[in-house]
Length: 407
Image (cartoon, rainbow, N blue to C red):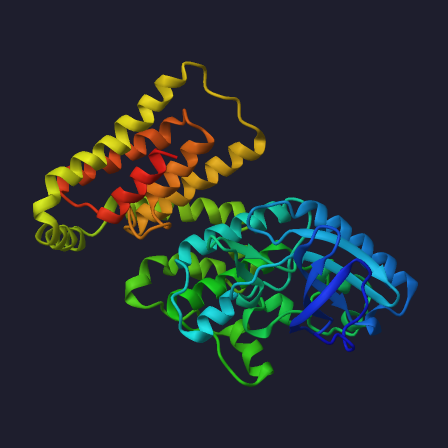
């Protein structure tokens, strides 16, 4: 296709335009050396007029790329300069972003699970001394497995370091998701990680309520709402998360979670509480529906489920005949994150269903990494026992388990 209007970046073939921003254009491109699809972000040459800016931006971008090695952050492959164009080659994520999902009315990911994953990404990068400054649905992408990926880490910080925009007090970010202190134009020296947590709180509120908490077509009026108005109540079905959202959206940064780690800890505790308390009425109705629909197959299906969940993993370990394998730091981290996600699935009633997004799948994935992990084994035993006790089962879930067991 014609590419006369595309910049020339050696080593890349630009295919199409993915989007525009205030400082750059993002292209779908092919990295020729690896025949790999990438998202190529090319900075507007007007923001790279001085050698000081170019050197500073490239240094900041490279530093940022080195700390963005996390499963919930878009990977940076390459950073460079071609003539007047500074570019960043990133992981290409073809699916819709969260904003597009919300705008289309499509089913969005589970809000609490999504907040947990983005908080994990923020915790990782904040620990390295970086802040994002522009957490919003448009910067949350999803890979082919449905995993959330945070995009554009560090770009705002690098730009803020040298352009005269911030020297004049201009505001970087998106107003609907911006913290009070950021909307007032606080600079890099005073803005900290708690601003990112506020923005994540706006995203979480939007997912739970299907609208942002503060709305106005007037930017000044919108800023005042962030500064002065209380957080609206969530819909009744999500009211248990009101305290968490209100703490994220506290006007004073000192009243918020002081780190993403604190937020993650609170999500875990509240999810466990939800799991323990549950809703007896909803569980009873679900069980009665399942029993009436599948009674002829109940006994056989439950036996298969118990066999697969309990005896197959244990017999697999015994047949190996050797000590548990040593895990790398990355494997340990991945295993622990899967265990956390499994707990979140249980908290919202997704023990074995829907496919690909339930506690049983997450525990099984954790066991693939660490076959000797006792918490995962015990959790699968508990899920199987619960299914047997309540005669509540899912034929699709059983089929998936059988398929995995023979792989």
